[in-house]
Length: 365
Image (cartoon, rainbow, N blue to C red; front, side, top):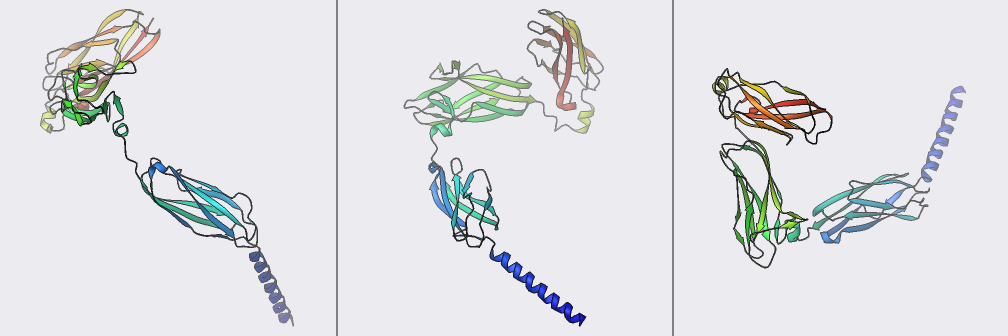
């Protein structure tokens, strides 16, 4: 009798729970989209923003609420029905894609999160790139002469090799023009090819740091560009082509024996100038020694500040010998108090690629 009672209670419990589950399912929302993919096809970049509408229906038995709609990237902006959608009613998700500056094929997704679960929508298409104008292709404006860039970055240049970089240009006028240059450093060669550009013709400006040109270290030079022998004035200044780089010795091919017999710079890390009077010039000396086995050549000595001028020995420093470097500082315009600067020595010592850096400390009273 007891077993029969337990069986009866279990059967009743199953019927009640099944009925409750069916009742909950009957009252759940359900989201059904007409389509999950929209293909915009092919369209020109000039169109800019394009939009499509995904329509959905609540095919469930309870209110449907879209909680979050998120696109896979910032180029796509979604809008959606934010009020509850009753059973049998419809809502929308609008996807807008910004094609400006995005030529080529694209596929983007939009994830729709609701109280009926997640759905993923997809938009795709192909953007035909707009035809570039001369102004887009050659953005630097030197009057009728237009350039692709105005800064020429040489980066590291091996002294014994030299280096050439090319700037593309176009004559954006209806008349022929001759291109020439002014204030060209002795270690740089610059030429236009061709020297005379016909109306609408494209050409190049070749900038070359010469081989064995007698210059070392960091360079930054402004070369004036002349059109038909005249300066091009932009924003009240002469138009210039800026050349940047670092001319260095190439130690990579040295053998172990050559490095063992190379010169070695020995110099303190800090130069202490002590107290200096404001608005005065003063000259100091600091010593550089050669602890190596061949002559040490100081190719260049520079400071970060134009107020500091250095004079290095013109002759090589013999092994085991020392030499002085003169340092003249002009404190005109210096604020009172401590100051710090940096001196760079470029040498033929292969250690640290021929570069020694020293710190200058002092106090202006």
